[in-house]
Image 1 (cartoon, each protein chain N blue to C red):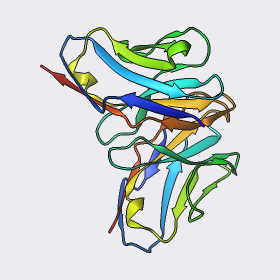
Image 2: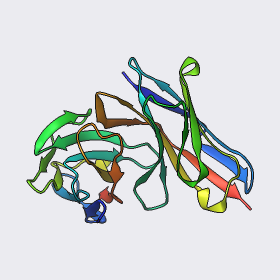
Image 3: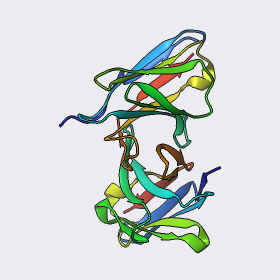
Length: 113
Length: 114
């Protein structure tokens, strides 16, 4: 059974560019959540996808968007990158929508210059 | 709105000493509570969770936490620290009706001295 995998592991982008981060959920998990973890901070909830539909969103602007595919893998897209978007982006998958155990990937470290 | 406060951004203990990491929560509904550990350059790993069953919860690696409603606390303890426990620890809360949205505290860095 493979765990949650995220790609790429590291990424450097220029302010104003767009970025796509990818997440493969753990086998059998139909729910994926995305978090942003700024340096020295706790993770902040961006949004959750359940069976290909957004199922809750945190306090992030619309330039943060996502997708979930039929195989339950997911993408996080960020448009018009800002310096403050530099962070570790974590993906977590759960077996079902109200599961209390989320399995986290190792994250994608995004640096915006 | 739910929130989590972790008292002490850095905690330093000697190997073999008691580990106590403090977490207080605020929630308008009976919450679910979690402790996660993060090792350098890695994601989060669930240590333990409280989901309204027993108030004393035992987790992995010898950690446990006690839910105290009267104190709105969920402190993490381990009787004897090991060097491998050095990491970042996060307390988190969720609404039982929305378990996918975890609200995390700022984190506590645990240093273990030989």
